[in-house]
Length: 69
Image (cartoon, helix red, strand yellow):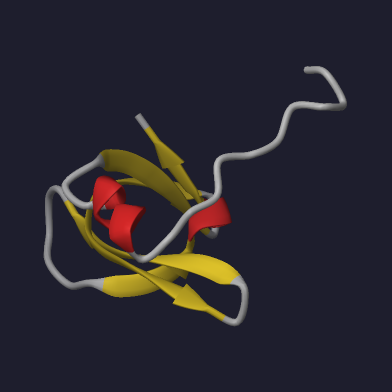
């Protein structure tokens, strides 16, 4: 990656791009398959609201803890 390359700036408009994506999160060594149901900005970070593919419940997690596939 070149030093002049910059990350894509995320805005409120394109937070919707995260919705309905699938991925995984690590919960104390247990890898859980999830679906993203919502996204938000919080104190300079992006949080994703996730729900397990098998099971129930939902939780907001920092996007850096989610591996999207």
